[in-house]
Length: 210
Ligand SMILES: Nc1nc2c(ncn2[C@@H]2O[C@H](COP(=O)(O)OP(=O)(O)OP(=O)(O)O)[C@@H](O)[C@H]2O)c(=O)[nH]1
Image (cartoon, rainbow, N blue to C red):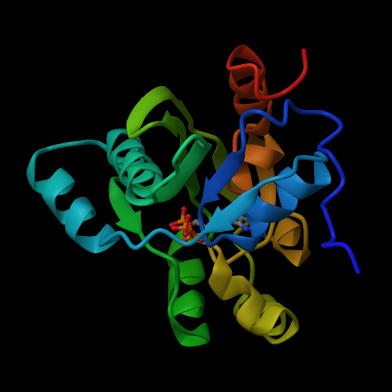
C-alpha cells in the first residue's frame, strides 16, 4: 500500500512549507477554512515571564503582543518553513486580561468588561530560518452591553468550557456575539489572526499564489 501523500496545496507553492506556531484551535480553523495546507506546533514559550518583563520595561499591550508572537515563531525549529507566530492581549482601561482559567474566572472577567469598551491587541509575525521577516498588529475595539447577571449566568451555562479558550471569554462566531452592542474591527482579527494582512504577506513571500 503506497504511503498516503497529502494532496498538493492547490493555492500555495509547495516549495515553501508553512508552519503555525500556535496551539490555538481558532487560528488553525481560520487557516484551514482558507484552504491553506500547513503543520502546527504548540510553542513552548513562558508567556507570563515575557509579559511581566515587557510591562516592567513600559511596553504597551500592542508591543507586548508582538514580542510574544515573535517569541512563539522563533521557539519552533522551522527549518525551511515559513513560520506563523501570533498573540492576542486584551486591555480595558489600561488593565491587561489573560485567558480565564475557570468559569468563575470568566464570570468575574465578564462582569468587569460589561458596559465597557475593550481592545484586542492582535499581533502576527512571519519568521524564516530563525529570523522574523514580517510583523503586523491590529487593535479591534469591542463594546460590551451592560448585560444582566441572569444573562451572564445563562451565557456561561450555554458556553461552558468553550469560553475558556479565548482571551475575552467569548467566541465572537458563537453566542459571544450576544455580549456586544458595537464592534470596530475585523472579525478574523478578533478570533485571533488578522487574516487579510497575513494572506497578503504570504503572497509577498511567494508562499501563496498571487
Ligand atoms: N474561537 C474564538 N477564539 C478567540 C476569539 N477571541 C480570541 N480568541 C482566541 O483567544 C486566544 C488568545 O490567546 P493567545 O495567547 O493569543 O493564544 P493561545 O490560544 O494561548 O495559543 P498560542 O498561540 O499557542 O499561545 C487565541 O487562541 C484566539 O484565537 C473568538 O472570538 N473566537
